[in-house]
Amino acid sequence: MILLGAVALVWLVAGAVYLALPDTVPAHLNAAGQVDRWGSKPEALALPLIFTFVVLATLPILLAAPIEWSGATVRGLAVFAAVGALFALLQPLGLYLTGGDGPAFARLLDGGIGLLVVAIGLGLPALTRTAPPQPICGLPSSAPVPDLETRVKGARISGRAIAVHGGVVVLLALLGAPPAWITAYLVGGLVVLGVFLCVYLKRTLEPRPPR
Image (cartoon, rainbow, N blue to C red; front, side, top):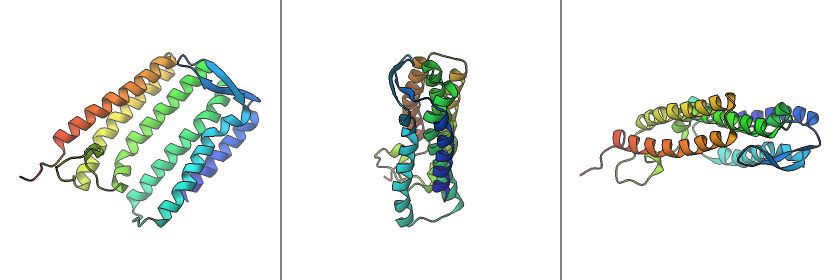
């Protein structure tokens, strides 16, 4: 019901916005945030369609899987639905709010992706509680798989760092930084942050392998 509600909300907003869009909309932006390809109005619905497809493909798996529907599971599902809905609305809502202006649309997209990163970071502990046990960062290791509380502790540390990174992206977008700079910081920062967190967490939280 949570996922279907998110899909209904996305199409309610996207449908209302779609009616107000011009017949031609920006379909692709270059690194400088300038429009280098224009497309027809229906292309603004690409992300809502992708989100709907992912939800419809996920529902049979969730219904068939032996999932224990605890509070943590519901919270994890709610985080997934909220992040997915926000992602789906970035394109149609961004085009509507910016009037198709390339650099403004690019900054709004970057700011929206920054909010997505913040949401993922804050929701990481809840998602970790619903995920199957696995080594830290999913990397092969001879050490035992950490227990749930250790994995959640690592998710809290990682989640806070990821949320701060996303917040900086939003701040850069609000300050009007060039879209290319924001994208470089977003992608490069996530790579550096991911490597640092994996090394740090493996050294501090990973159980020692038995001798």
